[in-house]
Length: 110
Length: 110
Image 1 (tube, rainbow over the protein chains, first blue to last red):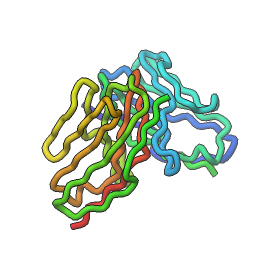
Image 2: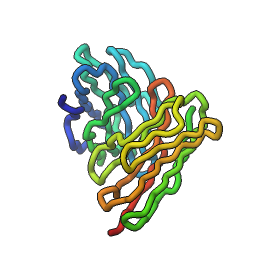
Image 3: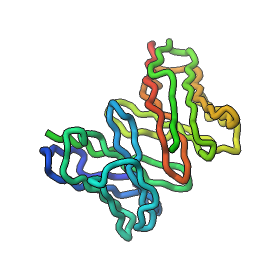
Image 4: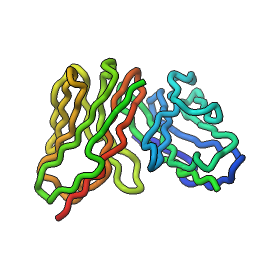
């Protein structure tokens, strides 16, 4: 089976812009979670989608949003980018309890 | 919400020694405890996990123990090798949401 894929791998934006990141889970997996990884805060949960519905949400402002499509692919969107949004954004595809991470999207906000 | 503490933050060992990383969690409802290894510039990879109905699990040189009463779980790596050098993250899961520890940087010297 192909692993979790994320696009794009790298992204440079300026403050105030918005960005959309994409994640394709492992075939057959219906759950996708998103995490933000930074050196200071570590890995922090953003949200989880299952069968096109947001099932859980972390403690992030409303500028962070997501959605899931009928083929289980997921997107996350960050609006009005701030410098502090610079991070590695990881999505994880879940089967039972096990979560498998994609390679991440490295977002740099200038 | 759940809080996971991980110690030590850095760990240096000689090749062939054992390494132990410890985590504590706060919410007794957590029922799944995975460990991830993240090499520089790569995605976190699941290396072993344990469920709350099991006290110990072993996979070759890696073992994990869980003490539900004390809300502690630990990763044990025996006969360490230079390729074990990486950042290790513990996590605790409630309702499929993972809360991660801050990570332990393990350095194995030849």
